[in-house]
Structures are given as structure tokens and as C-alpha cells.
Image (cartoon, rainbow, N blue to C red; front, top):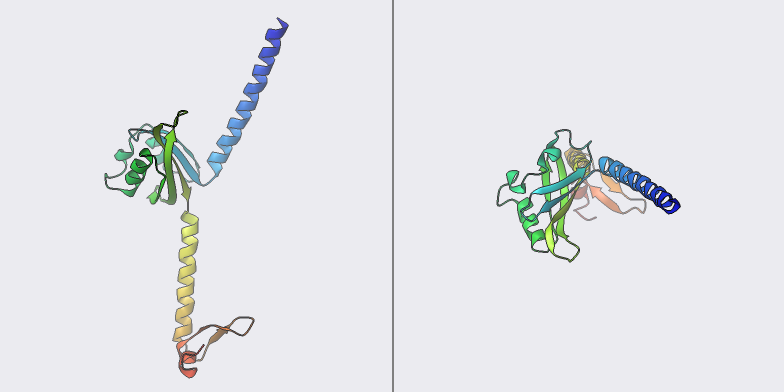
Length: 178
């Protein structure tokens, strides 16, 4: 009877640790700007996990149990990448889904014997990064247009006195010599 009690106590401890680890994993997946999924060999979604804050539409939940071809045309880069993964190779692509931009990577999902049984994928939400890059490009273009529109000679120097940029008036005055 004592051995049975000890085994039950160890099982309860192991279950509590497992629940704690599962809770931590769930927190991570809900807060990280990623989506992680698996498919079977028919490219039917078997699991989808990821940031709930990135998917207000509920689209990712609706994808579970459905074929990838239900959401993408046959010649799409998304399907091509998944077929590549089924052939045993890693592949990647960019996609726009549920109002967000993702950079995705898919790999073969292998069983314990190493046989390909599906695809595992991860998509990193790069929406904020892309928006920041676009804003920077617009700001740089605006600043360049201000420089070029001025009739005054404008020269931008670094701390060492090297010319970083100059407008048209300065270039003409300096004969384009930096």
C-alpha cells in the first residue's frame, strides 16, 4: 500500500509539473508574434497555435482541420513551400493574412523513424517592422526632397567633416565633387 501511495504522489507531482510547463508554453504562444502549425501529408491543418492578439478575425482557429488548398490557389507560394517540405526540404515565403504580414518557414514534420508525415511551420509577424521601414523610407524621401528643393547650398557632414549628402545647389557649386 505504501508503494502505491508513493507512486500516486509522484504521479501527482509529475502531472502538476506538466500542467505548469503547458501553462508556460500556452502563455508564450499567446504573447509571441508568431503562428505555429502542423499539417498532415494531405496538407490538412492538424494544429495551429499562436498569438491571439495578432488574430482578431478568428481565421487561424477556423483553419484547423481544413486543407491548405481551401485557403490558397494551387500555384501560390504558400502551397509550393508546403509541397517542398513534404519532399523533405525546408522552404520559406512571405504572406499577408488576417490584416498582418508574415515571414514564414516550413519544414518536413518527421515521425520517430524520420519519415515525413506532414509539415511544421512557423510564421513571424513582421507587420510592425515593415510599417517602420516604410515610414523611414518616406521620411528619407521627404528629407531628400527638402534638400533638393532648396536654392541654398546645403551640405550634410559627419563628425569627421566628410560629406554625407548635398543638395543640387551645393553639387553644382562644388562641381559634384564630394
